[in-house]
Structure formats: structure tokens, C-alpha cells
Length: 168
Image 1 (tube, helix red, strand yellow):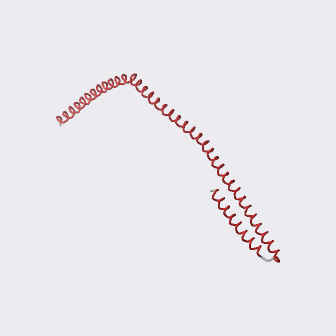
Image 2: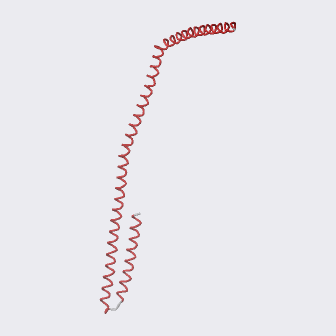
């Protein structure tokens, strides 16, 4: 990009020199009594040439400065990206380690819960089964007694109703 700009400026300076030579030739052809006009024209062309040369130098230095600033900006962005990469990598590493730790902890708690359930069943399971058998047997005895008592009461009611009907 910079070379294209310099090339265009150089061509402009060449064109200006060609114009200046033509104007100088034209001014030289003017009669001597217009000496003052000749001097003014040459002076004006010289000033234009100086201004253009100054503009070329300034444009070149500004282009170099802009290019340098762009390069520095890219380098700074690269440094910040590298710095953030370290932070992101560290965070991801810690997050991964934390997730693995939590997963290991959950698996351990699951195993411990299963072991506790087995221990509980081993200790209390047989006792609970025995208690259930005993309570079932006790319930059955109580149900049989209630059924016999109910049958006995119905028999008494039946006798009472039968006696009442005979007395009538």
C-alpha cells in the first residue's frame, strides 16, 4: 500500500518538474521588460515545488507512523490474547478438575449409601422379617379369636330371637 502511494507521489513530482520546465521555457520566452513577472512566476513555481516536497515527506512519515501504530496495535492485541489464553486455560483446567472431584465425590457417596443399605438389611432385615412373621401370626390369632367371638355373639342373638318368636 505504502509503495503505491509513494509511486503516485513520485509520478506527481515528475509531472510537476515537466510542467515547471515548460513554464520556465515559456517564462524565458517572455520579453525582458517583464523581468518582474518572470521572477514571480519562477518563485511561485518553486514554492509549489517545495510545498509538494514537504507534503510528500509528511505523507510518507504519517504513513510510516500509521503503519507503526497498526503494527503496535496488532502486537498489543496478540499479547492480550496470549494473556487471556492463560487465564482461560487455567479456568478450564480448574473447572475440569472441580467437575471431576465432584463426580468422584458423588460416586463415593453412592457407594457408601449402597454399603449402608446392605449393612442395614444384613443387621435389621432378618429381624424385621421375623417380627413381620410374628406380627402376622399374632394378627392371625387375633383374627381367629375375633371371628370365634363374633360367631358366638351371633349365636346368642339367634337364640334370643328364636326364644322371642316361640314366646309369641
